Image (cartoon, rainbow over the protein chains, first blue to last red):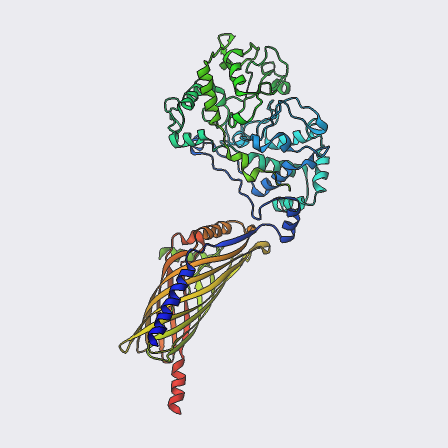
Length: 393
Length: 245
C-alpha cells in the first residue's frame, strides 16, 4: 500500500512537471479604452497595441552619422489614418494614398497623378518609400536640421509643410485648412486617436500635418538586397571602397552594375542611397525650360529647370520616371543618360563633357548590368508592411 | 551586496519608480522532527520598493512526509504616488523531512504556486500578470538552545501565463513586460538564510532571500527580500494539552 502511495506521488509529480513545460506566456495588450477601441474597430483595422514606428538605419548608413528622425508612435498611427482618409479631399475620393500607393513603394504608376474631380496634376508623384532617408539627418548638417526638402521643386522644407500644401492644392485634394479641420472633426474615429496623440480631442491643422509627417517620415526602404550586402560587407567601415569590393551575395551582373553606378551615377544619387548628394539638378531632359522647377520657387536663373534629385531606392517599382513621368521604363531612363542628354543652360556639371552634354554611351551589356543593379535597391518589405497599410475597413 | 545597498539607498532617498513582477518569498525552513509537528508563522517582508506580509504553515503528516503552504502579499508604489502595485503568491508543497539528531532537521519539498502582480499607473492604467511557479526546495534547520538557524536552496520554474496590459502604462514598464513574455518560463535558483531567537513554542525569525537570474533588473524581477516573522510551533500547544489530560 505504501509503495503504491509513493509511486502515485511520483507519478503525480512527474505529470505536474510535464504539464508545466513549454507553456509560453500569452499576454493581451490593450491600448485604447474598451469603448474607444470598439468605436475605432467599427471603421478601422488598428492593432490593439500600438505599432512601433521607430527605425534603426542599417549600420553602413548609421556609421556615416545619419540617424532616423524620431517618430511619435501615437502621432504616426493618427497620421496613418489621415494618410488613407479620402474624406480629406473635396470630392471625398482622393487620399494621400491615392497617389502614393504602398504596393508601388508609395508612388503612382501614372506619369502625372489625378486629383479631385479627376483633375490632372502637373508632375509625377514622388515615391515616399524612402522619405525616412530624405528626413534622416545628422542633427545639424549642411542641409540644416530639417533634412532634404520635399516636392520636385524643393519648396517644402519638411514633411509637414509638404502635406499641408498638398491638401490645399486645388488639383490634388482642394481642401482649405479649415475644410480639413472640419472634415476630421466630423469623423467619430478621430477623437480617440487625437486623445492618444495629443492628450485631448482638439483638431487643429498643425496637429493634422504633424501627425501625417510622423507617419510619412517613418516610411523607409532600407532592407533591400543592396542594404543587406552593404551592411554585411562594409559594416562600420565608412571608408570602404565600394567600387573595389564585389558583394558576394550579388550576381556578376549586379556587381558590374554596381561598379557602373558608382562611377557614373553616385555623384548625384549617392553611393549608399543614404541621401542625395545634390539637392537639385538639371539632367538635360530638355534643351529649354518648360517647367521652371526649383527656379520657379527661388526665381534664380541658375536654378531654372532644375529639380529635386531623388534617391533611387525602389526605383524598379516607381515607374514612370522623371518629374513629368515621361519615361515609362528604366531602359528609357538609361537610354536618356547614355545618349539623350540635352544641352540645357543649367545642365548639371556632372552631365557635361566640356561644354557639351556628356554621352555615357553605355553598351547593351552595361545597360542591362545597370538595370540589374537598380533592381537590388528594391525593399519588398515596405510594400506589405502592415504599419503603413490602409487601416480602413 | 553593493548593488543591494545602492537599491536600499535609492528607496530611502525617495527615487523609487521601478515596477517588479516577481519577488522571492521566504524560503521557510520548518524544524520538523516527528509526526504532527506543526509550524505556523506570520511575518513582514520587504524588498526594493515594496513590502508586505507572509503566512506560512507546515505540518508533518507522517514520520517522513510533510505538507507546506505559503502565502505572500506585497504592495508598493512610487514615492510620488503616481503608481502602485500589489503582488500575491499562494503555494502548496509536499515533501520529505529527515530529523538528523537532536538539533537538526532537513527536508526536500516539491511545490506549486500561483500568483499575480497588479500595477496601477498614473491615469488609472493597469497591468496584471498571472504566473505559476513550480519549485523544489531543500533546506536544513538547526535549533540549539535559544537560537535557530536555517538555510534553503530552491529551484524555481516560473511561468507567466496570462497578462492584461494597458499599453499606456508606458516605458519602462512595457519593455519589461514584453521581455517577460518573450523569455518566460524562467528557471532560476534562490537561496534563503534565516536566524531566529526564542524558545519553544515561539520564535522570532529574521530572514533574507536572494534570487539569481540575469538580467533580473531588466525584467522587473526583484533580486532579494528580507524580513522578520513570528514562528509558532503549534504542536507544542496540543501536546501540552494532551499531557494535561
